[in-house]
Image (cartoon, rainbow, N blue to C red; front, side, top):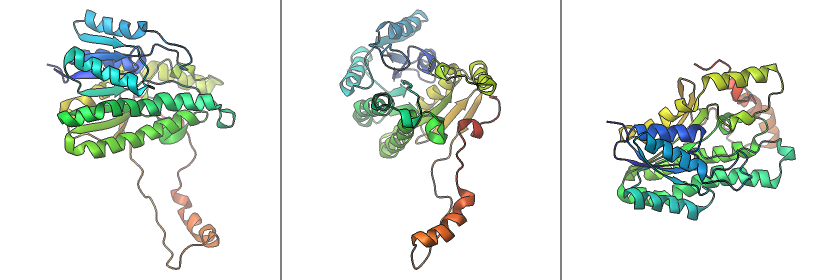
Length: 305
């Protein structure tokens, strides 16, 4: 018997990459699925298609699982409410959401357009809000529910050229934390994963030199979407009932638990601070505890396991 036997799960972005691997694995573990994907491009700049979501659903059915397709956008709260209604009408229940739907519109911040900012925020942060808001009352009323949202080391650590993506993904971390805190008494859990995996989004990373070519090559060969799916499915299992409010990463065969912001140093001055004393005393004293400006590659400089 699988770890999701008898459960109904909504998975967004499930036509490919991490979302599809989550859907296939969840089905193998006994879940019935609503497979959602707009069917658009990686930049989210086309109208989309119902075909890709149905392909995943059909693949699951061909393997003996149960799945229905949905091709609406997570950027619309009304559309997400329709996904919830579809799950309940089809299967009579909904127990969990896995939400990896996403787009990329990278660019240096000083050149970023309003459209590129708004589009990424709409899919990642507003999308996370929508799938959570559309389901949270249902989960609370039945006193069972689990979210796996997706963050990124672009937000947790930082990557040049991804200000919009980083802002959205760090916002998802805050949302997940509050969902977990507010849901604790109702058995509603929320966790997030920062995935390292070769997907069509990662394939858009520009290769400008030999070092970046090697880095992209390592990602393609050693960090797969199916490895991320293992943790996502485990986290929505009832057996993970004591796991909530956490930040994970998956990098190849390595599962990482991230720290969350907590004070690292404190200085007090009984007579209060002035700009002069802050410059002369406080900031120099704290400098040794500053976080450097290194990007994700500086925090994970080793090859994937």
